[in-house]
Amino acid sequence: IISKYDIDYIYLGQLEQASAGPTGMRKFEQLADPDVNILREVFRTQQPTGVPGTIIYEVVQEPGRSISSLVGAPVANSGIPGISITPIPTPTATPMPTPPTDDPELKALLDVVAQDPSNRDNRFKLVDWYRQHNFPLDAARELETLVQQDPQNIALRHMLGDAYQQGGQPDKALKAWEDARDVDVNNPAGHNKVGIAYLDRKRMDDAIREFQATVQADPHFVEAYFHMGEAYQLKGDAQNAIAAFQKVIDNAPPTGAEGWIEAARQRLTEVR
Image 1: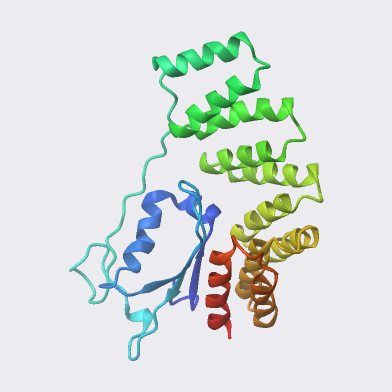
Image 2: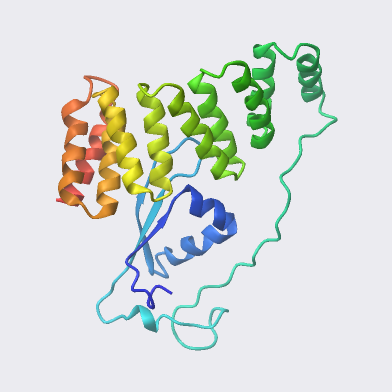
């Protein structure tokens, strides 16, 4: 496929990773193994634990080697000479795990919430239990109730989107983040969150629009400038990418943005 379509880069955002699953992602890890040297990882976003970030691989071009020659049998060390990637079995779809009904801590939390459904603190504790024990869709169900109780709370809607994303429901995740943005169109964090989601879904123009709205609301929101530069870079627009990465440096606050400044400088070197 790499040879047939003359592929130079492979982009794996949250949507692609969710579709491929852990076993599907291992194929790319195999291709990027130094002993195989078909792909080389050139970019990876820094994300919170448990939230997949964007990964970009470059197809390695070696003098005298044609990618089209890298054809082999499905099992390594047999068949046509060349690089053979051992196939990974396609996993059987399994339902999302359900919380243990006999867990005493969970049972106590459920009982407390049932006794007073309007108590937000108790429901938050239940959400935290689900998140800590990796039951994101159960956390999302409780967050839906909290959002209904406090519809203007942008942070709640962001948490809801994160839970759906972790639970493998990217469409619902995007809807929650878009709803958060629309609650307060002057909130820069709301636009930035949606922009990142669009970027992961390769909707570059939509992402750029959201990042522009972010910095319009807050010129010192340098993360948005950085992601804007990423979007322009992926579009092949070097001039605007350079301008966006430079704005990270020019608009950064005195403290707290050192990581973004360093990342922007690295990107400027790459693009130039």
